[in-house]
Image (cartoon, rainbow, N blue to C red; front, side, top):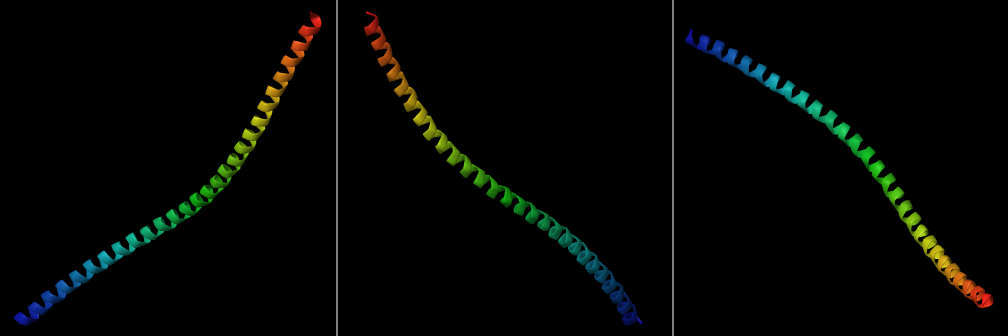
Length: 100
């Protein structure tokens, strides 16, 4: 009779352990599902950020080219202003000579 009681007690323990294992398994599966969703979201965000980064790199490169073009145009304009200043001084000097 005592072995029957021991078997019944073992069965009860096995059922409790089985329930605990199922609970842990279900909890783990839920965590895994949540983790997969988070990973999916992060991958989508990363993809979006990578696209934005590429767009910004292109825009930066375009701005660098524009900056270089503007620097060259500024140098040309500055040289022209200096040339016109020299011509103006020469013209003013001639006018003074003619006036005296």
